[in-house]
Length: 368
Ligand code: SF4
Ligand code: SF4
Image 1 (cartoon, rainbow, N blue to C red):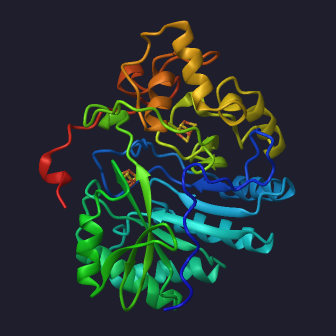
Image 2: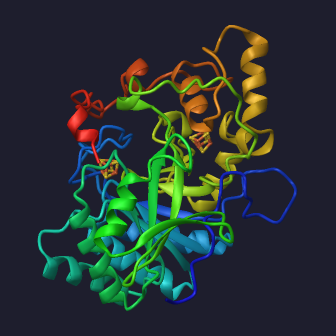
């Protein structure tokens, strides 16, 4: 086994060296397409929308980000591998600019057959991709572990790296929701164990090993009724630096400051790469009445403002940052931003079809 990957950035762990609190993105991520081959019950992406991000515009924006000192790139979706030419061409461009590569988030189940799977992965790797493939493995993603195992084997084979994967899992707590990863490890002839050195769980198998990245599941959008976000304690201030301090560009060119569970809300849009330069979007983010405050004063300051105005405004306390964020934004409780979106605001969006409510999640869909 080669050197284990560095520990994933935990919520609250800062990538920035400066102690001055301000929106200072150091990570660029593109979502070239909303489309996805799955239909997960907890999904907060409008996977029905057909927009695609223009490759030339994404390349231009990448160049501008490099000039701002941003040097790390990732891809997300929808399912990013449903738009492989985007991955390939933007990777090649970023590689020439000296970017380092983080991860391509994938469900690992978008492929038709093994030759197509391996040809697509090879295409991206040959463009210069040196990052990892982050596969979602949890009870929310309805994918058979045999399919995930084939993805893992092919990724290791084509990249010739046994550390090519990381695994993302959404659950209520880091030690919960590992059953599907354990089932995957079994198929691969390995095991799952907590690493005190890395401070996270790991899957170790002969052909491929991976760190596990925990996502604190926020029941939002179509999953709003699936769980109670209000668990009785308040979150610790973390300045949103784990999922945030980033330019996350969606297929419509809109830029978000984070990839948190509430980030698809219009209220977290700080610009559009079709209209604005990276420098302009940086300024807009800092001047944004909500985003600017999240990164300078913190989410707890926003909570205090909300409660000072109306002590009964919130249903309780929550340890989940993004669930809190979702609640105050959809209900219009934060200063300077209107309430809209989700099942409350019904995804009102002028000129675009609304994000239709999906059929309610069925128990068998949620099974491991
Ligand atoms: S794989 Fe991701 S993008 Fe696709 S439906 Fe599931 S959560 Fe949404
Ligand atoms: S709390 Fe809000 S701003 Fe922070 S990461 Fe979550 S969605 Fe983004």
